[in-house]
Image 1 (cartoon, helix red, strand yellow):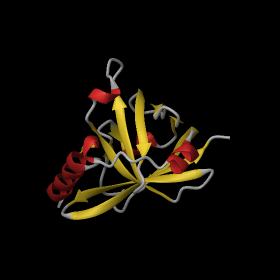
Image 2 (cartoon, helix red, strand yellow):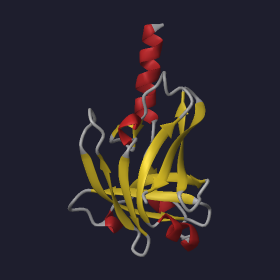
Image 3 (cartoon, rainbow, N blue to C red):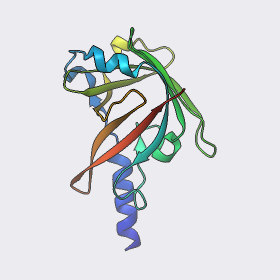
Length: 160
């Protein structure tokens, strides 16, 4: 049983938050949704079925729990921003990002290294934008865990 649980944990770590071709996604921008995201946000929770059994390596950066409490800045007029992980006991991480929201309510996200030119970075993440209000929104990633698609829900709250 322990070997099976270890296998599933390894499987989740390998497939969670898979990289997608950002270039293969629609580039028609939903300006209304995008403008509503402008500002400073805190990622308040990461939820998924089986979170007590499996670890998810969010965005191939750190355990999903490390993203709780992270700071995100979204600038809508140039599709840029940054993210910073600050949770104790987790790796320190800070990066510039490029992002946009498509008409299909897909949130396209690319993490940039300091010397990267955004147009040259072709790998990124495509998540679903859901439940957007003035003060909150969710980004949802679908990952294959043991042959079953599972939603990883990232809940954001706007900073006042």
